[in-house]
Length: 137
Length: 249
Image (cartoon, rainbow over all chains, first blue to last red; front, side, top):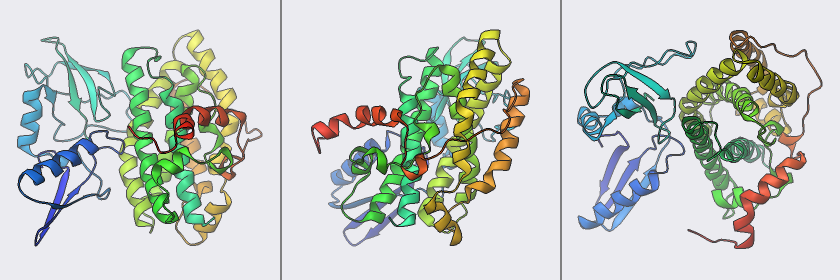
């Protein structure tokens, strides 16, 4: 819910359907996410469970809740900027990203792609911490 | 074959084969961060291929799955353009191929997302967000290599010489595209060419590179006629399912 992956829940008698959407087309976590939703529902007594994946409207980081962003920050991942500074014509225009450890804005991008497709790699020039930034999408 | 099925397979094959080629860099990238970047792009392309294949399997309706479409078809049944199957070559060639293809995909998906087939439109809308990052990343690299050292410039110039004749096919409609354009379901690829040239030229200008003069263009892949290189790629990609059909993790 916090990441905006769960789009809808439909309950009909004893049936429950959860509508989810992938963050990225190739996100390898989607199978694990479906499985965890299923296990969680089973532990709450549901047996007639359907999990449906939809592509449209396409997931966007704007659907992340403030709680979700705070959880990312606590974990050490810089959450997506509220407003994306991404622009196709300006190749070298890096996003200004706040360091999740010391809150400094003196950070620089190391790589457009980080440990997963949804993140890029930054380093803080003040505390020197390398960190992941959850890209605007 | 039903044109919508052929078109969906063509879209899936194009992304699967390029994904497989790029994934060959896993563990061999020039530096760790770029190794991660090219394999992340592979993953995006693989995800796109899975979405196209899942849709194609439902259109086929004969029990086919995304896996059977990827693993159990032969070369002549693949409809990817030739440019994505060519050997990866050096880093410059990999970058340039990704750049040419991402620029094409961006224009293609911008139109496809507004066309009436809901599933194709949804996949295009989803994929476009990823492709925008691929365009940016590959453009930055084209500039870095073109406007870099004597050697990097020489390598990317060689890549342009080797790959340019494979770009024409992207914009030449295959029979299934012609059939679907008539009913407004597919993008007419010939309408993308001019803007593609402009976008490529913008980056080439910054990279101090020149677009070649118009030359003879290779074609065939979109109709199932491939280079020898696709066979070797499929042999590796399909090996496990051919030897142990239906095996699972």
